[in-house]
Length: 559
Image 1 (cartoon, rainbow, N blue to C red):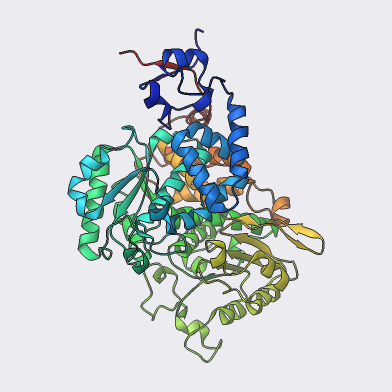
Image 2: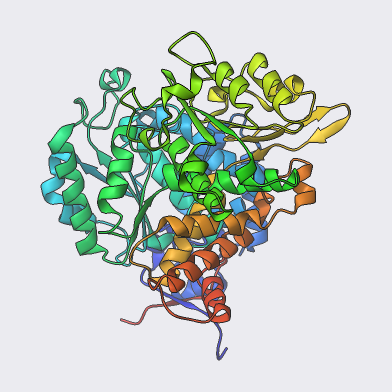
């Protein structure tokens, strides 16, 4: 029919049936089977997508464990990407914890043992001289988005070497699910720098380089060659740094953020998602960010990212930079961070003079409880990976400090969480507002069900990526994450927040990403970095860029 949308495909026959981007499985029509040489390859019945969804969901439901479900979904992704994304969108609340956290952590740990089919690109450090040839092996030439890791700091699990590839694969999938960035535009990459994980080095099935991690100048030389090659091959691609070690992450972000359009989700995405949930919680108390006192337990890249955006948000509420910093108390493995402790580069901007604690305790080390007690903290944020760090004593003191304490135990996966939501509610007599890093079921206290909001970066990074790609900004600024956080927080009413609903339903992720992308694109435009379009046309452009996983009619590409 005239005007009908269709797609010209470059393959026919078995090659088409085995290509995950183009394959429709049993849903190829009679005409497509005839024109594209598919007769006899599939059973006779022409399925609808609804029938296919019923079939794959039925088989998914038969799997007993999260890792079995993960493997099933990965196999579906490897044979029919359109069907995979349609399935996950239809069951987002159920399947996102399987596709990504917490199940992806187990997949990373067992990656070499469950490896089936390559996805993305692997760049070993000893082959960095061949980087241009390796990048030329990308499945598509028009890459808009790259997620790269070196596998050193996977969730709360540490160094997983080549198994870290599970993270970029998962993150690119979330870009597609969350923001509709077409899968053909996304490229996961693993930089194999070796591993310091002795268990992996001794594993006869390990697939990565079998030597200790590169360090020093050699490490940064590999990164430099990688970035230069990406600029040559994919000059307009957005690069996301993912799960790099804390001694590299901030340095890489600062070194390359002006040279290539890039950001670090563990720093900036975590910060924006958490501050959105925190803003909602505080609006539910009918208070302001600037009126709170914040204690951070664990202050690496996640804590730094949250505190940095928090400080900007408090300054926008009228505080000076110094006054905003005075409300933030970071605790590292040596206790409260003082400026005379030679603090880490993440901690240094938020370190306090030791004189402020002269009347707190007798010890040089000021622990979590003493900090919560003496600062009268109203907000407690955990990014430490230390399970049980928020003890009953600490949580009870939070309840004494304020009528409705805010407890964010953000470490992943669940068994690394500083406290469970149930422990937080028990210790505070049900008066707290809770956020977590991994999904937890609701908690019932006095016959009242309390929802648990997961401060999932998925609320932020897909929209930021889409907004950056659509606006064609040459760089990602800190202010883009501030406006992204505000756009997300605005989707939760104070009434809902007062009941513990601090973030939108994950089933609304496409609407969330649209709002975040629009806010980022507007900020890029207003900062003189992005395309100059009025608001209505800019939002329309965002909507048009969001791919919907549906089958288009196929025609053979003319030869």
